[in-house]
Length: 147
Image (cartoon, rainbow, N blue to C red):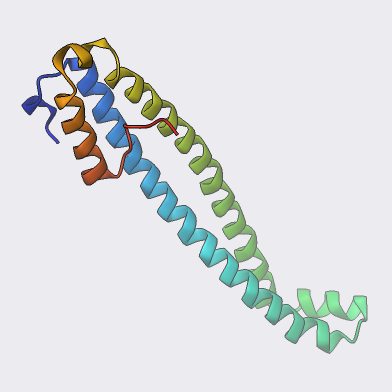
């Protein structure tokens, strides 16, 4: 929403624009986190089956033969490297999600406090209702309640 159509202060416009930007970034990080988590789980399942079927069973519980089978094929090493890489990427997205979620929630609470301050009450709650409705409908951001 273009905040120019509503008679609000510049600091309020800045807070609301930043809130929308953080929500968009949080949604993107959430999608990427879920995508990489799904890919990692799938690769783990394939790897467990592959290692069991092609390494553990042929080795007949002989550790030296298992190590020989594992290191003798580049596909085994590639699969292990892919698992490690996907784990690192997924872990980074998990950390990034936690940080971004915290930033978003902090600003959302600040926006709620700001919208419920005396400037809104002196102008009536009509402006707050317009802003709240737009943020909820357009960006799925709740500025009506803190919890």
